[in-house]
Image (tube, rainbow, N blue to C red; front, side, top):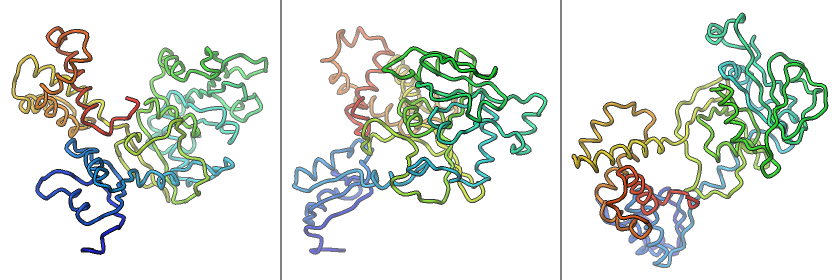
Length: 384
């Protein structure tokens, strides 16, 4: 142990120090007693008993606190191209062949004009490179190329690009038509302007109305960042090569706002596989949304029946596929709300236009979840 040598030192920790008595005394008091000058914290503790309280306690006692230790380091990784746009080839041939099966399984391959201009990409399925299993699923006689949908708000794409010398439908999403001579397989689809840009949400609605149910996206940092920020991604499939491109290389995504660690886009790791010398990683957005939906149903039932909440939760989960539910968060919500229901209701009252008795049971359950999260979860983004 450092003992007296700890006085005036900087301390690096992976998790926010606690400020309450559990099985051991509070870490915060030990740090203060040791005369620590500064504490650098990687993650804020999600435990409602701590979450932010440990930081406040340290600051009140004159200790400097810095959070988000890993945020800047991580920016050096997850790069998709060099600063000048060069990207051929970061991943191995095996990885590039593996992409073909995902393209083949999709109704649409979505990209942007920037990607076409930089790489002169074809964005089609190279049928000869499909593995045996995929070939059995898509025999050549019935196979059709996915529709290639290109976001091109400034009409930068021209018929001279290689893509237009290939088979398969191509839809150019634009703000206005041009007078160029396009191949028969190419259609210009015009959308209304929104801040001099194409409304991406309208594009997805259009695809839905066109009975498109599976979209594979291969895009650069800007479009990828927008889609991630707007929660329009169901799954991330990331190919990782054992190469470091440096901090000036282009990132996986660009986000318009500055993120703190607690505001970071959260995903659940589904699988990792080896592809030649590379790795492929599958991630899905955090399953908290489903946890909230399940908690809503339980709280609604509890309000009406007043059954034991633990028993109700057990019976409820027996009938459901728990794979995509954040069970830890689900349990935190139902137990945290039912045990503190009176306090939560009192917090709500000043903001209600009706009395609690006049609220419907579903309305009440939704509001209780919302107020619980806002007052007890420090990892809820500030903009919420």
